[in-house]
Length: 479
Ligand code: BG6
Image 1: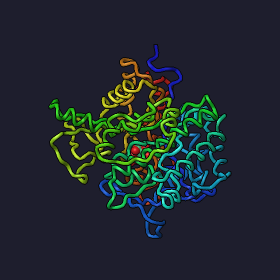
Image 2: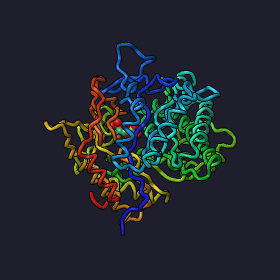
Image 3: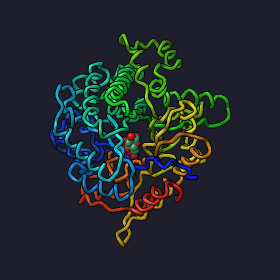
């Protein structure tokens, strides 16, 4: 018997802001990403006030999918993808965010994309917001600090739900809604919620107010979506970097248990429909005054998600008596006391490579929530070299993906986890989120573009393209 269901959603994952380009085409407004410069490993991206002439903004052009989508989708079809996870740029539909009428040209663009995908029998899986808040809402309203932004988000969600209700079944609300728990890196609050912090503010208190508003926005979107089409399947999307205890010292175990709340706070609310006790206790102890409106309890209760989508790239470790500086801490979602795992190697960008951690994550999430899971991001960001014959032998990427797929199949086949699908991140090379680089490549299709924006944008299939095609054809039997 096949280990995976015959309808298993093998696919690829992308985000509008990282690959579409066309940042000022089709009536699109500026988004929070359009004022982010390129950084590199160890050098943070800068968020500028406006677009400055002497700075480079890699998301403006992405990989020019906006103008090349037919060619790219044909390649996805050839790879055999059964689904494509991408996002709708909020700013194509409501350029400033607070308009009452949507931008028809933006809606038409996604009609074209969806129709093109369906032509190749590729199921669209859409994220409503993948770090794409209109810049106007961030600057003029303070992003999700402001409850009005909830209404604007819901208007956007309803507009796209209505428009695509007969063509799209799978949705998710906010991408990696929980990565902003890491307030040490300003880009997370900015990209997720359009929020910047004043120096005298307590980042944690701001975060929880923002979180509340965003959780309300997510729950309202789920309820509205189900009203518009009861057959929609709507999930949330979290980043899961499991936090291991450094040792069997009970203090390390407890440290990890507490730290893992950073991962679970958002999904605990989105799945259960109410706040977990540890959060309420923390608000009380810290004297946080989180503003609730009448009816919020009901909204959360009525807007729970039907599946959990998550990204998995790596794991991390905490040691109760260790103190590391944020600068030294290379691990994404870095914690003040995280240390390197001596059993695990890391990528060039310092991301720990841990396939067992994916099986562990699938078990932890499934046991905690008993909802279907969807791995909507996983992959290996690295540089690629062309061989003399013009091919790209990306064996390291294949090895990474193979081991993670094996671990996922084990979770299904041995542990009984309900897994809907697997969509490797950046199925075609795109702009990196954290660094803005092009050379941190995840793609199974190469794009000729460098960190400075030079290159012909030519697409070339890597060896992993053919390998993944066979994985899909054999439904994971041949890895
Ligand atoms: C996730 C995001 O954090 O990881 C993606 O949802 C992102 O947008 C991906 O691109 C990989 O991160 P990076 O920084 O290597 O692009």
